[in-house]
Length: 284
Image 1 (tube, rainbow, N blue to C red):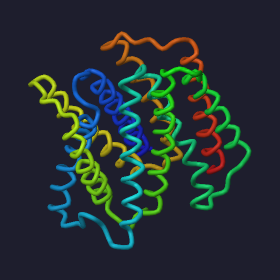
Image 2: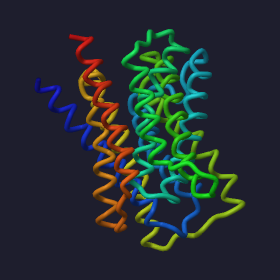
Image 3: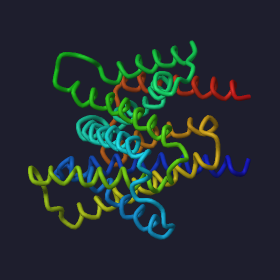
Image 4: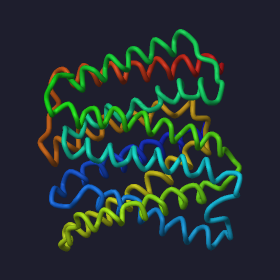
């Protein structure tokens, strides 16, 4: 029970740090998107580098695991870009709601790629989640749908990244996975600096460093939370990210989601709760 309580606290801390990171992204309108993505990964890269050096681990993993590490980077990096783009162009709470669809997509990707069984409850959860996403996105033939669609796709890409992490499993250290992802994500951002780069002032530089620090702390907390307790018992607490994003966005940005977004968020949270209860009951 003690380990479970510790894992829950770590999950809540992780959700709060990622929500704070999301608000920081919106507080720097003059900093280009890829510059924010770079700093989001660079601090994690430095941290993972020193830990790997100290523990004498592999930086880029075993040869047989590198294709999975590469796909984890490719989908994860693309997902971060789209999520940051959605965050800058729409309400923070709406972007958080769409991003939290990824656990639902993981179930169905696991069915096709990992041959895990799927049942009627999980199908119902998917349909409920998509209904919620439709309310948040508010589809129509206008440009404002692009950021919302980007947020939706970011959830699918994040789910794909999680699937390739499952392929890696315990074959590589968590720090090796983090280093590989952060290294190639950081390097991939550099060419974009030739197209658009803004020299940050002291305030923006501090925010960028804080952005990367929060991302690193959130990822570490999330990793230790799942290591200390079965995912089925604590995954539901990750959805507090939506609540934290809504509160922080109101405090710092005066953003208030409209009725349709709140209704969509309710459906997404309800679907997550149903999935959590169903998974827990099956385990018992």
